[in-house]
Image (cartoon, rainbow, N blue to C red; front, side, top):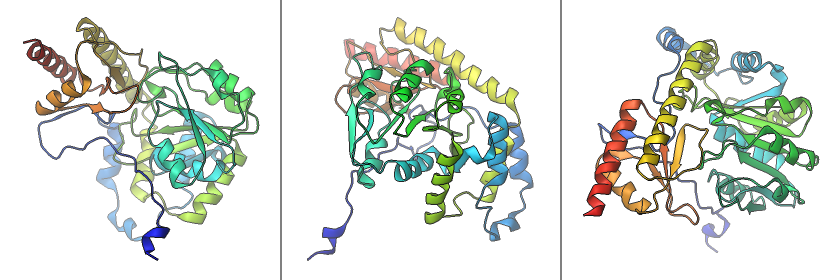
Length: 354
């Protein structure tokens, strides 16, 4: 008998390409084009490196207290992890233990089915409507839990808080997770619903709107009992998940709200300008409320445009998957980067017309 017979085999998540070449325009992983809050640099400059010989605070109090204060909840309602991926993975392991399937959309963040496979969780992918929207009636069936991003990835479509509440109302026996990785780019958070629904878990991240993808900070806010269960699982696996420097930088980042809002406002403004210019070129896309646009052109193959952009050192995201194989996900960069993209698209379309 081969040892390989006992290996847990899954098809892994494939992250966006991280190019090793220089002088690229990187619009493929939804990173923020602007740096973190300036005061974060002060933390980096003055950090006492000798602290690295000691274990960090397993309770992450400095970060949790800062998040709790910022979002006006109790510290006991906050859970932190190494990026929202770590937080969601831990939540899958903690809450999705029914024999019934977990529900999530068919076009959504492609890590969800990977986690379900890793943890051997049954799941059902619910088809979005033709315009990539959630039909709440589809989630009014027996299930072992529900998760979806809002705004959705990779479409950028934002659902209303009323729709989320409609789903919560009919699923009191399931944990409902709303992945709000992109909520700061024009959406309304469902955090206020926490006062009414103890089975709601809201997940956010520092990777997008707070320009700290490289620091890996994610967090969940929910009922105190939910958070206690999450911590029980975390401390059963690895107590020291976040390092000293990350905890301090994460807490510091929350102090400069003006800078935060300035960055998100610039991205929103650039996104809306890019939408208009893409539409003028004939591209179609859902009305994104995220820091990316999910664009298709009726006259040109998305995979060809993707490759031609890459040849010009402009990286966007493309998936050769059913329903979305004619779409590219384009991260919103600086205005200068988006102008370069638009110029390149015009050139490519001209080449393809010859």
